[in-house]
Image (cartoon, rainbow, N blue to C red):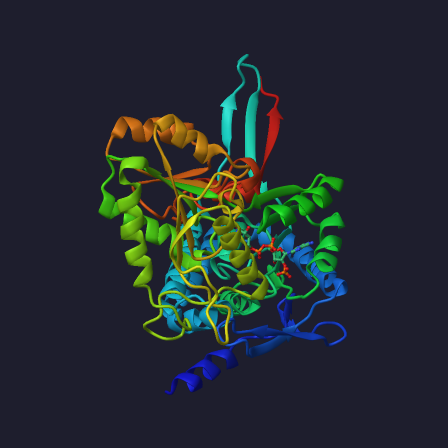
Length: 489
Ligand code: NAP
């Protein structure tokens, strides 16, 4: 099949309406909005533009399905998740193409994301049957303590555009496993991946009303009534710290339970005893995965002074060799950024660093033509006041600074309001553990440039948020503990 035909064919199977109570329906008022290909700036599809009334209809459905879904046998919930895993794996190529079309990343990366997302469904299919409480003798010997863990109830999920399937999967899979129902609002730039995931779950046997999908251009107006409605019992948000803060304020009105997966500003520290080849490979992965548009992206490179020049040289060579292009081209390694404002922000941060005296080793400019492309960029000797050292870059830009002592490296790494992940390269085990303990982050990559793993607890500290996704901890976000005091003897 010709490439354009293949693109048209996969888009034809994407639902474009809202999923409410097991039915696909138009938005009230019939409004739609366009989803754009960031590589060509052309419209891919029009999808339903939900109004606040549609969001409340979705919550009606989620709330109506909650009791029966919580009563559904854990094995049955697990089997639906397992079938979802199998379907995602079987349809990887089509789903990856849809993701690349709406988000821009290379097809190889989109395939990787589908595999990663699918693994959450497998992991939580296994966890669904392992929810348990305890029975214990009271410390006085009189009476018993019984605890049970129950689903928290209807959840509202708000997800970002950078990992359009995985960020939903990390919430939906554990919530479904725990027996919660859901209203999810994906990002307006990338609704297609969520819509098609919902279709896959429907085909895997998920009953109507358990997962409801609301696509909209009016995030604020559509999410607010969901948070103020007493039927909503949980908000899980992945996105920027700024929006997370605003949603926490709204959630506070009803003391709503929340999980927040927010922004990052990951330091990537290379000590002088590191395996330099491995560090450069890790740096490339931590920086360039997802075109740098990842909360886990290495935001700044702190390299021991004696090796900083050589590290910069080798990283520049590797970045120079990356092939930039439309993600659908099989040879592409770096796709476009998501939109014009994101590209403008990256350019602004690079210009700021250069104006303050940073040395440009590579790139430093937007690429001409259609699409929101920005050249892979390396900056050396970035001065302390440069904005890119404290703000999330979210683009293919690697700022390098050097340090003299371990103390200095740790202090620099922690000099941020964020605390999602840090990367650390050293061959000295004692130093590795010492520094890993002192770094203020929810996750540490030790001699590796990627930490994401469905079997591990993903999440941040400080203003990167709280709550964990994945691992044994992931399902806890969707369970609450009830204690029964038992009079006995
Ligand atoms: P964003 O602007 O915060 O948007 C995230 C989601 O929130 C989108 O669905 C957006 O809808 C919605 N939203 C925006 N304003 C809202 C409001 N007033 N009320 C309710 N919902 C609202 O973030 P983004 O630019 O899409 O994503 C990038 C950010 O996400 C980065 O900071 C990144 O670090 C973070 N992130 C964190 C993690 C993690 O696990 N910690 C993972 C991935 C990304 P619209 O699309 O309609 O604006």
